[in-house]
Image 1 (tube, rainbow, N blue to C red):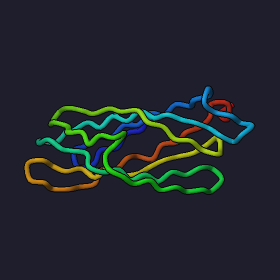
Image 2: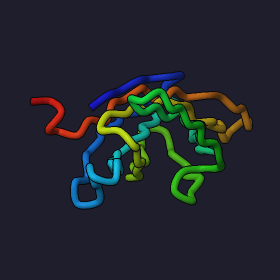
Image 3: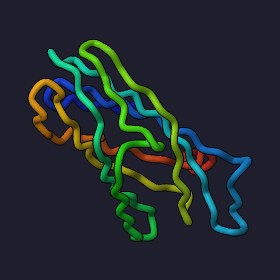
Image 4: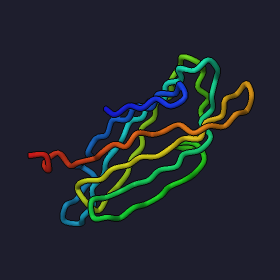
Length: 128
């Protein structure tokens, strides 16, 4: 698990290889990842946007931006967390992701960025 705290918001990421959806013959490798966003700040926040950088080991870089996560713009109260699972596919057995969330502090509508720590996704058989 990889964790980073920015402005009182902790983002933790854990990734999982999905062999049942992957195919080495077709150069298609699927991973899922679970993210927990824990609000250690004093006031409620809302996740407004996400901005991802996705790298695979052949040098291809993709960028993904958009509103919310998995169709939601969750409000996270002080001391609470929001957790979700999503996924990514690669043409290589190794990839990595990193990014930022744009959060809004609800009591004063202040927008700020929270770092999503870089995490690596590796097909387990590459570790042997």
